[in-house]
Length: 374
Image 1 (tube, rainbow, N blue to C red):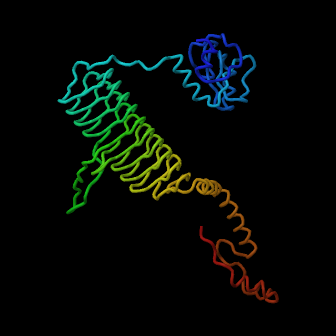
Image 2: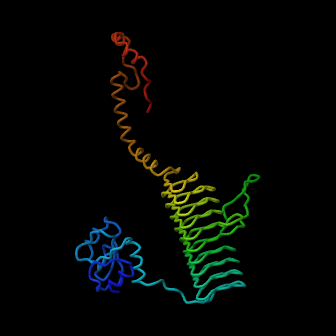
Image 3: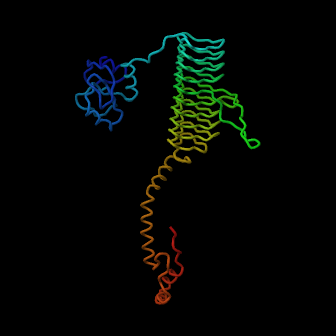
């Protein structure tokens, strides 16, 4: 592809030879004359010294080595994604139809251009939309509905009566609609609380590998339009996740919690059950949220605190060794001045009598604080 054509695909302004041929993408430190790379931050510029890229995708004002063609664009990362698709093509789709060694129940419906791979098990009354891809070894329970252009990668499990919207992507090993974690402690033992609700994934939702979304106890666990879940995320029963939320790997959301639109949860964070996380709130990685979060708040720490307050506290904690050393030095000086060594009073009565004329000093000596125990 000529560089001028790639610039048009990326929506970028070309600086340099537009006739240059570009055949692939590469990392900044390994790019060759027929490859394009991208620089999203100036700290990566030194990587270009190790390579000779055919072109660089970069933001306006980024200083690229002289002689290297540049595609100037506001969002270099997004433009590079467009370049990847243009140069490497769309994903390979399996042929439409139902492969051998697949078990399918009654009243099965499948839209045009959809495909089901081998060794899948599909229950009764299942409906697949148009252009759906079900890769091998998936399980789809009774009464499941899956919308148009959705992809189920290998070993995805969707339990009975769940609904999956259009253009969803569900990665390998994900489980949608397993029982929620609910038990009653009765007569000295735990008894299972029945989980008879469902899960609904709205349009343009993405579920990471080995992520689990539990069915509601009696209503619906819902992930709204545009929400993205990373790998190994746990969504508890009756949770509601708003539109365009992003949840990073290793995060757990407790039952009946509500995440409003545009919430961001960092990796390994945890949301206690029955909480509400306000619109646009951001929770840092490894944060434990134990109370409601107001809209737009940035939270960090365990237990969670407002982000700036947490950072100030952490900065103070890191100074504790230095502060303790200064404290011990000051303590030693005070003990020296007051005659107190090792916690024992070394000023005898005669010495105190000699200083009796200075009443303030006498009162200080007699009333001074007891030794500080370390």
